[in-house]
Structure formats: structure tokens, C-alpha cells
Image (cartoon, rainbow, N blue to C red):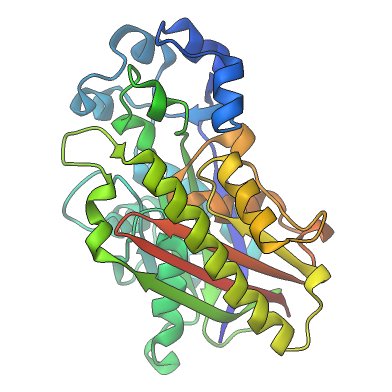
Length: 330
């Protein structure tokens, strides 16, 4: 079993509204965007003037234009997590990182985040694109506790607007930037405990969602939407069954899914008959922020009774992968 001590998040300041996207002249508007994906706004590390002038035709320029790096945004989320957990960087004995678009091939991005925070300990990447957070939990839970330090930070620094083609209306309406950081322990009790994890994959679907090196994000939209609904529903049903088996009430279980788009999430909630008021999301105002989407919803509601007694966190990602974790109040 793992204990969750805190989650932190960070959203960059610049805001990409639907009105801004409409001003780019890419044949999109508020009605079209809301009907298809239900997203009103997204945050970005890119200057809006850069997007307006270049539409990010060359992602290599976006790395230079960005106001913040993955290490910087990951560290900011990490500091909030440390504050909430009432811990210091000296308490963290390991950092794991995973995202959709890391800054470098080597070193591991976890090393950059640890360096920015001042953490002294082994740091490595465990990444499965948008499902990275639950993949990290799955692997940490499976490890021998005596091999692990008291506190581990799981970071998901996501600044994927840097790989978005802003002349492509089908993708640029989706993506936003956000970073999250969670602090877990294999032995020291915290306010939440992780009582179940789940991880599955289908490598034959690897070409359906891609970000090539120095290229733009692409996906086979209709197929990916169908996959996301099916697999996120599968994860929720498995975690719900675990919760009920443990004596829990379905009405006390909150669904937090991968924040791909609002219409996908609504489809999962209908399919799984999620009880009224037990579905939390932020994709309508934050956009698809990759692996930090679901944990950022958790973080934005940190300390709130809206979270219920348990959380089924259900995510899907490129690979193809799907994963989840059941959190219960300790």
C-alpha cells in the first residue's frame, strides 16, 4: 500500500481562449469548439504573440520561445506539494517524472526537476504519456517497500503546447499546459491511501497518438476517442468493483478521468452510470494537459469534501496504455 501526502499543481499565466483561437483565422469558433470538445480556455508557456505570428510551425523554436521549462514548472508544482505535506526537499528521497513531451532525451527529466528543487536522491523517468501518473503509482506500489525511501515525489511536467500546430484546428483547441507533483510514501501514513492500482497496454496501437522528435502532436481522432471512452470506462469499473468489495458505497466514490476533452468524459460518466455530483473535472477551463490532467483535478480540490470518501482516478495514454488508482481517505 502507498500513502498520498499531498498533490500540487502549476498552471502558466498565458491563457489561450476560444476567442484567441478564432482570431488566428483557422476556421474555428466558440460554438464549434464547445460542441466538439467542451473546452473554453487553456494555459500555455508560449507567448501569445509567438503563437499569433508563427502558429508554432517549427516546434524547435517553441522551446526557445517558452517562458518556462518543464523543470521549472515541475518544480513549482513540487513546492506546492511540499507545502501542503508540511515537508521539505530534504525529506524527498526519490523523484520520478513522466510526461508527453520532455525537454531532453538525457538526462532523465526527473533529474532536472530534482535539480531545480534541490532534491538529493535517485531520479528517473517512468513515462507512458497521458497515463504516466498512474503508471508511476503502479510501479512504486509493486516495489519492495524496504528498497524505497520514506517519501517519493511523482512529477508530471506537461508543456505540450510547444508541440501543437496552431494552424490545425483539430488539435490546437485541445491542448493546455499544467504540471503536477504528488508526494507518496510506502510506510508513513498520510491523508489518503492508494489501495488499488491498474495498468494495461496495447502496443499495436502505438501509431494512433504520436509526438515525433522535433515534430507536432498528431492523433487518429475518432479512433482515439473511441479507445479513450472504452478503456477509461474499463478502469472505472475495475476500481469501482474494488471499492465496493472493500465495503464502500458507490455514492461516496468520485470519478476523475483523463482530461482529454469534456465530451469524452461525459460519455464515460454516462456509460458507467457515475452518480450525480461524483464526477470532477477541469478540462473545460484547462484543456487537455496530458498526464497532469487527472492529478490536477485532485490537486485543485485538495482539502475539499467534494472529493468524497474515495477517488477512482482513470487515465488513458499513447502507447496505447490505460491505467488507474483507487484512493481512499485514511
